[in-house]
Image 1 (cartoon, one colour):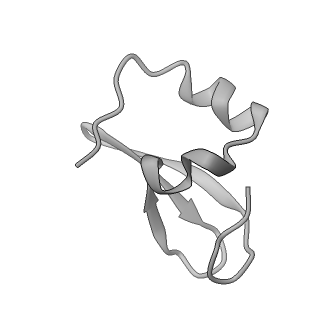
Image 2: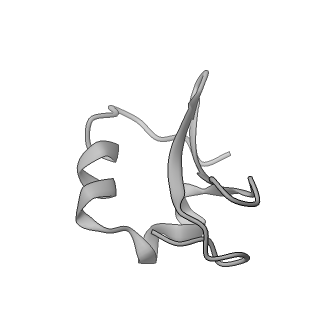
Length: 56
């Protein structure tokens, strides 16, 4: 997945009680629902491991 701002790679950022996507280039954070339409199979597989994703 690519960042909308700088085209860097988005990685899963797991924090206490929430999960976000963070760019490894510009460090911008996205809520999951902001990038849900861009999820690739690899990222979906990782996110499926979590029992709940909180959209805060």
